Amino acid sequence: MSATRSAAPPTRPPAGPGLRPSGVPGGSTLLRHLTWAAVAALALLVVSYQLEPFRSFQLATVAAYLCATAGLTVLTGLNGQLSLGHGALMATGAYTVALCQTAFADRGITGGWVLPVSLGAAILTTVAVGAVVGVAAARLRGPYLAGVTLAVAVVVPALTVTFDGVFNGEQGLSVPVDPPPAALGLDFPYERWQLWVAGSASLLALLLLGNLVRSRFGRTFRAVRDDEVAARLAGIHVARTQVLAFVVSAACAGLGGALLAVLAQSASPGAFSLTLSLFLVMAVVVGGLGSLAGAFWGAVLLVALPDLTHTLTERLALSPAMAQRLEGNLPLAIFGITLVVVMIAAPGGVQGLLSRLARPLLARRPSRRS
Image 1: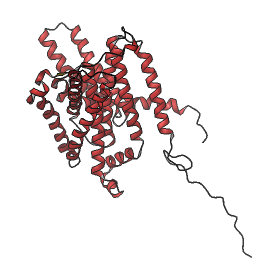
Image 2: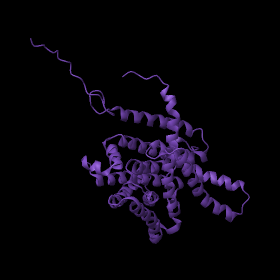
Image 3: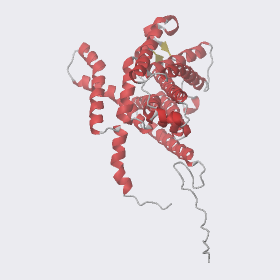
Image 4: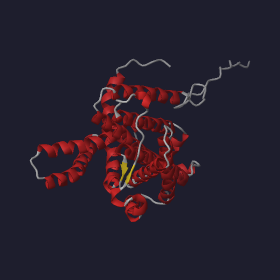
């Protein structure tokens, strides 16, 4: 007598990361990032009314550096390419926005759309330069890649001095910027308006980068970083992925450099030297390599460190020449010491340390049933 076996109900495959139970890619990532961006924008608006003008300018500078450090985090932390030439890419964006703003001012063209157009032109120009460098970088590895990007960091500022008829040599170019809109009032602080402009641009850049990291392109970036051979066997075009990562990072660096030029209202080769490129690499490592939140801590450190050294030199009874020499070399020394200490005490950077400290607190929360 044959035994009949009851048919088991069909089981649904478990949902993977970023998937809804139905297997469809989760649409909550964009909504979550938009929510965080809205919260950050509201917090920035509230804080801007509480800060002094100088602190508003400092926070705007942090937002400008954040664009560059976030792009370098995507390139180095997620794709595994080391770049020592991001200061040159920032200089490309700065000089582009200076030339555009000067051209608009010479023709008497004003309006609220002028600055966004100039920033867009700076991003496109830096994307073109980044694509050229990225194609060369995709063929190189290790110290050869670092050498090429280091050469870019040296050559680009030198070009601004060589073609002084266009870039005005060591003096640089001025960046004419329209005053805040009249609707904000005649006594509206200009530094607050700068904070709004730089903060809005950096939040938009972080929103786009956050979605890129969580998308298919972000997964291919990490796959190439972890093992190029395995990624190639999985059907990923390694060279194309590396060029794309370099282009994205260059666009962010160009935006950061353009914002710095708008804040300082000038673009000069001294502001984008080789030291800046080294500072950017150390900033993303100290902040937390591979994390956009770590890029924020690195940007804060880039702004806070010169202020700290200036305060230290003011308190010491030094001659003007010695104080100037100390202010030029002390930030690099402090940055190097901080990098060594962080690598020993917290290999994951500041963000990794904060994540480890917050993990026990999150573990105490009652888990939700799926």
